[in-house]
Length: 444
Image (tube, rainbow, N blue to C red; front, side, top):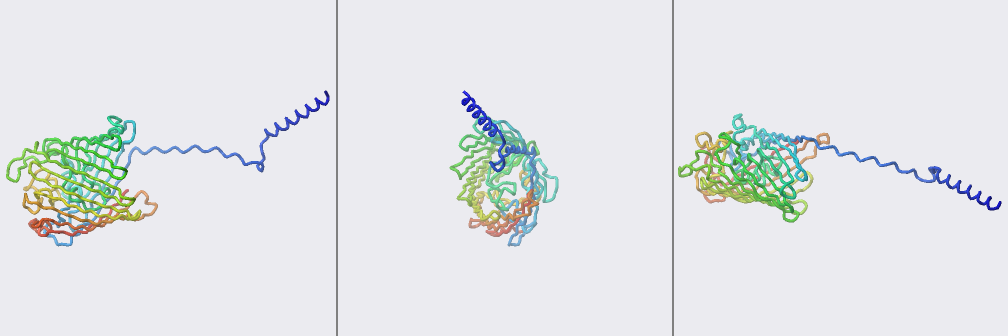
């Protein structure tokens, strides 16, 4: 018995020592200290309600030939029409609250984009800021619309915008930062609208298919007698889709009456301006070729039933990214003005707007080439350009700088057409024209 009790006592004492040893903290040289608890991840700050951005763009386009007109003009150009004269193209400010088109819930926003500069001469929405100044630099609204994203009709929902908004058509845009080249092609200048006032919807279906449907007051117009040059609405719409991973296609049309009140055709017959339709059709195909080369093909056709005139062509643009700072570009285009109706020059600061209102020829000095209607002129232009984004100091991180030099050659392909180098009477005297342009865009 005694032996058993003694043994039990020893066992109990040994167990107690083991329990105490297990409960005691370990010394630093026995094992590593436990890792501290991970700090909670910092919450992502919410995006600001308002997004404010802008840029200032200025440049010059030189013409190797002397010019007879006053001011000297680069024929076939609208935004870079002033030869050998530095211009402020755009001083732009954008204030917006963007919608989230990928959201599964409804959300709302808006966008206002105002501009001051020489570009506004040919971007005016009729009825807004048309005659606020006689200067080459004018005010305009590129965009002013309210937006909504609604999770309806399709898997990706529907986006709606109402107000003043840019056209769907064409590969180039009014905002200078959205183009590779300083000058614009014939399609952008003469073959597509610039903007509309109305309502546009885009419905996002599966497999990258978007359907656009909208109604507006016409090309570059607003509402009312002073804002719309006739009394009829227009349809604007199209389809966008992808082919594989690297090709996107956007096919669009704008159909509606566009001739101004009081218009008469080449035979002096009064045009029914509310029923004579103008058809503006455009297809843009963008393809990424490898990691550095992008191809943009723009196919265009325009017809006006009132004057029985048509035009159209194709533009091909290749952009190669050489480095993070330098890209090279080539644009080739053929555009046919079958009746010498669409390609024009607007020497006066209000000529473009007056022409849209139908106040020609008594109230403006618009020039049609070669001043002979119903004759064909087919234009070709080849433009070589470079985009340089120089590195800027770190403390200017909210700013950007882009410099875009280019060389451009325009030519009339028809045997007897000589629309370039206008003389003092506004008649063309040469088949071709060489220009060199350069601009600088400071963004913020």
